Image 1 (cartoon, rainbow, N blue to C red):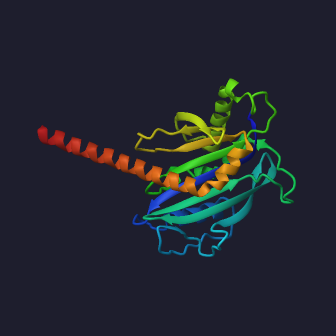
Image 2: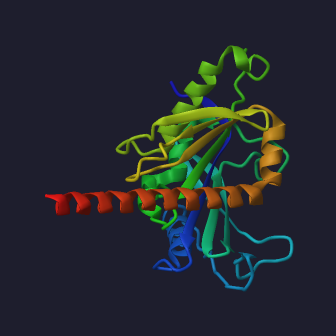
Length: 269
């Protein structure tokens, strides 16, 4: 039996060196996902500008630098609204795409909260694994962040969280498995912690050079966590950008080291 969650979200943070080919990879992938998987007719259009950190949306305004769109998905023969936000930017020598797909918190009338959905809803946000690293293929890798509210009335939410941490971990594992296509293996659990008062779980082993998949599952138990995440969204993009650049450099270093070691051993023979 699957758990019920409220307003499940997925955030893709993908990074691609400006000099890597094709240079338009992130924008092409974004348009492919929203058009083929969510039947969105609007396209992400880019306009390059000078500067260290630049918002690249062609039709951006002072107050809005992202492409907004809406769609529908079907879960258990029920049509459910999905909304999305795509934010393209460049941070120095790196193109970045922040793509958010979510079940809205409010119905279209903006007054009534949406109903909770099965955790299996997350599969609809990653149709055919369209958000996985193998499909995106960015030169500097990516981070996937899943956020869900647990709104079921259980004795451990939120005041007794510390007494029942295994239940929160179980929900995080369930959301991860629902998100990743059945034919793909889940990344290994790495560590857990708290961010803005709500538990967050990290999956993926950094030393794994091939098929490294970095996924965070954040279970919102307090309104503060969601609000702070929104307020700090630009900082999260920066953080994940620098993190992925460091890890890419480390993985490249290990690859070069292994090649040098292999060549040395051949010469010694």
